[in-house]
Image (cartoon, rainbow, N blue to C red):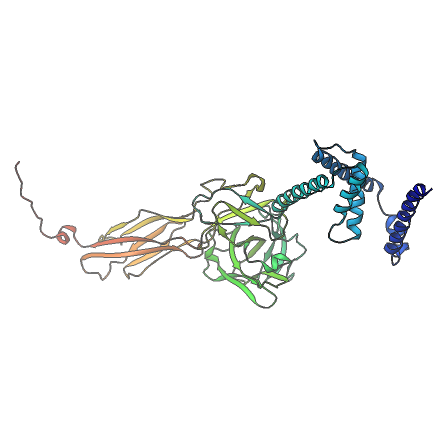
Length: 463
């Protein structure tokens, strides 16, 4: 009689415990609200979710069965029941006592060594820890084992952080700005500023508190003016973080988009950051987008980069290569799963530099007109800015032809006969890190034979 009563008591106790837990769980729940939400549940996704939970539990039971071999091969049903009971206890009691409970129940029912079962559970947890660690590392960032940066010392990354006129946080002054269709813009549209127009774009969350570099993509209608055409500003909640003034001559050509980099370092507790473009009215300014990149790091392998979002899976990653002086390459895609960062083309990412042909000039004064010479000046692989030429000597006049050549003209009037030496400095003000070039100029005024003096004859030596 007593043997029959034990199962009845055990079953009744289990039912009573289940009812008590149910009452405690729903005693302060609005059942009408639950019913309303339940009526909106779609059966198919719910069934798929339930099926995935069942498959997960069966997979855990199968793994536990494999770990028990060859010492024992417990039935899958018993192991599944033990896992379900253990998960229930874990939900009710802290410190995951459910793992101990399932070891005890399965060992009691199947007469198996509890030491054996506890060892298999410890192996389970070790495997779970390794799997979750690897998954979280992949989700939170990437590790690059191979980097070929083509000589660039630094790299920075972006998770497609681009804001343009389609962004809800993008705004402009309607009285002095117009949204236009533009096939060269990232999203096919841009904002044209006339007069003192303003464009703002703000970001929040981790983008507001992480140091980075904002790349403003814009173009101007006049690249010949030396007046300030726009001011680029990065503003935090309490202070202005960065500002950069742009002249028309800082653009290579008129009507072509260029990117301008503005590094910034916000306060660690900032909730928002605003990127602002102020047109001054000196020229028409068209604003396309602002792209955000992380702060630069050394482009050396191995490189572990953690996403500020703490999530990376299924996200595209873009990279830029750059130098400490601010020169940067075009953006290109990086595939985190490959573990490699390889610059797509050496031609695309060569550092910007100046080229001048010829590298030295010699002028001879003539009686009819002042001597002149033409120089071909190029800023190779430059993204912003045009070259500028200057000289400290009073007898040289510099100008730029319609073809973009540098014309040198010697002003010989009033100069006594002789040989004059001078220099022309060619630089690019808006392209950080481009070394200026010095072109030596020699001017001969007067008859060359007279200037050279009496000829000198060297003795002949017979051997």
